[in-house]
Amino acid sequence: MSGTELGGGVRRVRGNDYRVLQPPEHFTPELRVSVIVPAYGAQDKLDLVLQGLARQTYPAELTEIIVVDNGSSPPLRLPEGTTARLVVCERPGRANARNAGLAEAKGDVIHWLDSDVVLTPGAVEAHMRWHHTAPYLSVTGYIRFTSAPLPAVLPEDLEAAFEPAEPHAWLVGLVERTDGLTNNPVRPFSLHVGGATSVSARLVEAAGPMDDDLILGQDTEMGYRLAQAGAVFVPEPRARAYHLGPTMRMREQQRIDRVSHAFVADRIPAYQWLRTHPGRQWKVPYVTAVMDGTAGYEAVRAGVDALLASTVTDLSVVLVGPWDTLDRDRRAPLKDPNLDLVLVHGHYEHEPRVRLATTEEVHPSVPFVLRLPAGWVPGEDSLARLLNLARTEGLGLVNVLLRESAEGVVAARLERVASFARARLVARPGEELDDAVDDVSGVRWVDAETYDFGDEPREPVGRRAAYKARIQAEAEAERLAKEAERLRGQVAKWREEAARWRKSTVELRREVGALRRELHAAQRAQRAQQGVRALLSGRVKRALGRKPRD
Image 1 (cartoon, rainbow, N blue to C red):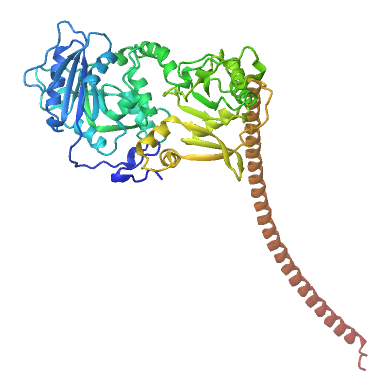
Image 2 (cartoon, rainbow, N blue to C red; image 1 turned 30 degrees about the vertical axis):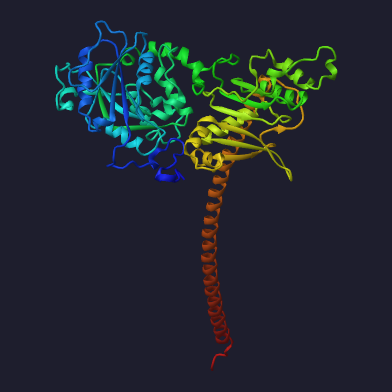
């Protein structure tokens, strides 16, 4: 199942397989779009961009154009007759400029557009037909990079004026490798490039504005937060555009990656390949475990210590409890009715990976949340195996059945935050959220024993020992797989040999039959010859026995 119907005919998208949406070729435009164009200098290119926007087939009355002058000298101007508004942002930086435009935007859809990207006439309409189909999309057009001389006035035939041009090779490659981003891609949010991307304003509100602390990589980081908010990412080849000249990335890709990777590693946990250090902490952890801090000192400590000893080091723990009202009894501490809370607080107050919170406080960019009932203890590799299962199968929820009784079911839950965000966007009134998650990502139940969860405290053996044990187990599994393959090959050879034996047996049987027939024939011939000899012998004897006549 790729999608299910929602009220109003909108389909739920499973993973990033947007093909189930099937936007119509013809639709009645209703949504308002805000096109935000941050600009710094290059008045000649901006004029061409605005001319391109004036030719769009999407209704002008539903299109808002906001140009943000990011401290140009001389200041930028708007050409006569344009419907665009000019906003000034003195604080330098593309993220600041886009955020200034975003603050002014009133549209249902936000369309980012660089000031050196000229849209073909049907580009905005191609974007908007998707947004009329579902309210949780990020749509990116196809940009081609032209080195043609800049015309004074935008020509009618853009292809004739700007071709030959180069495609956005990285974007096209990503789309082609993942069957249009539908085949469970690892990071579809990478499609969110600010040059020509449109996003539901509802998603932008949920994700927040661009991160102005970043020097580079703002587009990708915001794309990641949009994914966390439930976005589906759609490449639209009919939304075509021409970039006037090469981009900075085309000229300086290695230097740009060097700068952006240094910052985005802290903010995008999905980029695990940038988090190679085995022990350091990151601004946004890969997984956060949430536990009830009021369940008793020993029970809480058993679970927390097991998590901190996990092979997953990119982790934080949130202990929920009334820590803000906790007052330690210093006269008779052993009689303090809140003694267990005091002990939990004192034990983890200075542990940097444990946060004592009065409410469930999970950073919105954390991709996975583990909800662990107090008193249950995961093994050193349990969390790593659960994460691997969720990633491999694209699951939104993995339930670990810990105990089942007449009183009910006790389970640990590994939740993919993006899947639950999407589920909240599409859930029907009164529908169980887990059911919506099952539609958009999938839900799996596993048992505690298989994934090494127990209800007794364990002595942590350390990450290295657990990692070594896992590596050894994987090596043993690989060895057994190779042995099984060898045995399968041997069995195939035995089968071939048996077939040859069966064939030889048949041939031998045929030869034996032929020899028997020949033997029988020879025996008959011999008996016939013996009969002839006997007859002749008798005749001779009779002849010899006759007396001669006188």
